[in-house]
Length: 72
Image 1 (cartoon, rainbow, N blue to C red):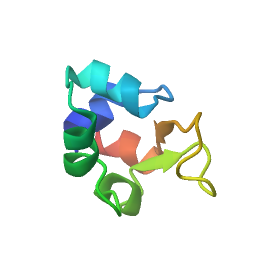
Image 2: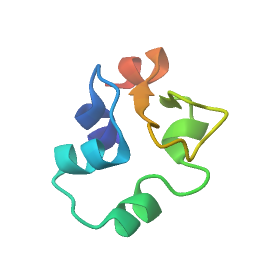
Image 3: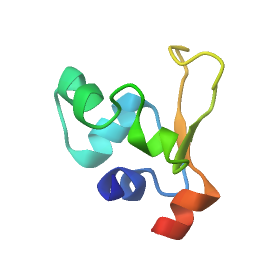
């Protein structure tokens, strides 16, 4: 989870952008290991969605919360 938080930093990143930052290629594997339902980073309050009411929104991005910033 720390590597994911570091990759996001102070930005808002899509799943594809997070995968590029982490140098990962397999989207299914990334979603299974980094953002499984419910994602631990989201449930723990370390990340939040740009469109929380629509998890599959085409422009969905994730960003670090203040709690996530403190963890870093």
